[in-house]
Amino acid sequence: MSTPPTPLLFLHGNWHGSWCTVIAHSMGGTVLTRAAQQAPELVARAVYLSAAMPASDIPAIAYLRMPESAGSLVRPCMRADPAAIGALRLDPGSDDAEYRQRLRNAFYGDVDRTLADAALGLLTPDAPAGIAFGTTTLTRDGWGSVPRTYITCARDMAVRPALQRKFIAEADAAFPDEPTAVVALDSSHSPFLSMPGRLADVIAELG
Picture 1 (cartoon, one colour):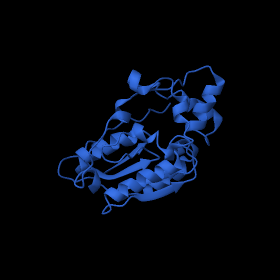
Picture 2 (tube, rainbow, N blue to C red):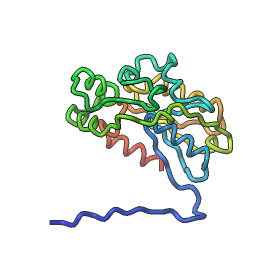
Picture 3 (cartoon, rainbow, N blue to C red):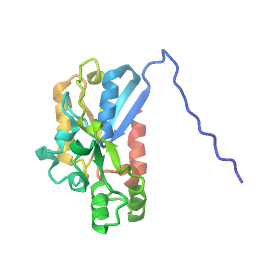
């Protein structure tokens, strides 16, 4: 019986410069944006995988109400008002077959059914609402100085393609000196499950 490999954590030393490419998915984009604004020197490239990339001082939650979000299946999946309970609440453990299908359609539209069901079991029921309601003031020397790539997902029913394009357009209008590199995938919201090999190739090509 082989011995399982020991996990390793590499801590980068001082003075080596920014080398870390950070990839954010979905609402995680708001966290990446804040981190890159606060410490741009630590991020070699910010990669948004069908992720929220809100403009300066605009909360991510506001985009859910914009015309570009039309057709998104996320809001119908919410089990409560985020402003009232302080969380983005889903119910991935629900016994309601129709509701579970809505979740699959929202997040895993092109993912194998068995794998999608397994992924549902890994979802966190309550995500902190702060990441959706918080805002970040973006500056040219902060977030605007970090090279960025947006990986679009053409069949995304959570972050709709029109909204993905809006994020890119707003960023490029605000920071034209560092335009967004765009890579297109013909996938739903979770290409790391539906086309992991292709996504890995894209990330590897980013260097």
